Image (cartoon, helix red, strand yellow):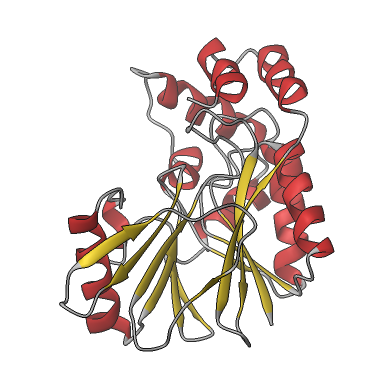
Length: 250
């Protein structure tokens, strides 16, 4: 099986479709969406309708913090994220909100744990962005699920961690498009990046493709019409910063 791992779509239809098309061309036969389907972006309904269709075809779909916020936005907005949650909530039909409400926080697929943020208290939305936090995530996955591989998003950048022979968890920066063998004797944590809002200075969308038969993982960057996506943000009336993030990837 080739499993496409997409996270943090953030209602960016253009980036989402580009990644789905790229994954299919690369041989993906199943999809997993690791949360934050909505939030920030201007096309929550189109993205959710497509995700719901793929879920009906067997895709795994998890819930993220922005999905929760869109279902139950704060009564008043103090931040741009609060405003985004209120705006997104108003766009969604009851069926969309019910779909988000029914999504799990974790899933086991091909002996791997999938989660939006961290396996350590998934509902706390901890950012796994450095080795000590990766170690806590791997410990929780092994102890709670018996999993030696974890795939997550939430951080909006791509990173790979592994537990070395001395027990320390070490980072490894993958090269786009180059498959990395996930040796069975090691524990692995892959942060697959963000489809809809990269933040590393490169506006191309991010996702990862796991070949379960060969136990190999490739991180991908996919060009898409990010200028058109930014224009759609501006046309929606969402904060200008959300458009600038797509243009500058910061």
